[in-house]
Amino acid sequence: MSSSCCGTKKQKLNGNYSANGHCSGEGGSNGTAMNGHNGYLTNGHGNDVGHSSMGAQMPEMCFYCFEVLYRELNNLEEPRTPSFTNDPFPLFVTWKIGKDRRLRGCIGTFSAMRLHSGLREYAITSALKDSRFSPITRDEIQRLTVSVSILQGFEEARGYLDWTLGTHGIRIEFYNERGSKRTATYLPQVATEQGWDQTQTIDSLLRKGGYRAAITPETRRSIKLTRYTSQECHMTYGEYRDLVEGRGVSGPSQYNVPGKVQC
Image (tube, rainbow, N blue to C red):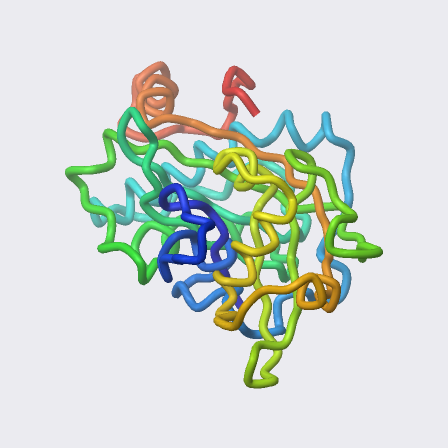
């Protein structure tokens, strides 16, 4: 199953919460994502790999996501099989638009998926099927930036504060005021982008997951929290086109993307 977990805008933490303030638990293909079901963390979450070995391949993953979306929007055949690793990992694909990089779609999965099929699926799903947004159009693609996040290092925390801002993504499980089990997640960058401390992040995540009652210290202590890390890479449409046009073809003849993109 899929979910979302990015921020669409600064979320108020004074008691007024926007239902759409943040991606629905970064991982959802249809926006239902991490907002309240418990099927996302499945046997093993994928493999942990060396940071450098994965990082070197991630610009190619961003390139591939652009290829998939470009061809989908222009009714072209699917791109050829990429050369980066096809090992299974939990993953997220995020699309942002414009110079201010406003969120345009963000969906992924906590189930380990083969990267070739997983990135192909979520590049499309996050662009066209995030229920919080209208589908991305051909007119918008030139203003897009794509981010690929590969999730690793899942650990059960000892408490709701047993994680580090800017380092860990977090997934929480809790029971709402009606006694229903709910889940929600934020990727590692969300809290720092929003300027939140740990408690503010937890409270926001509870609201995102559908908790509507007053949040007390006891509420926070009752949470089951899983922390994880993420390797992330970004690529703009301009960088994607530079790579395509540098080969002198209408589409890439092979996937051999230099690691010039910041990861």
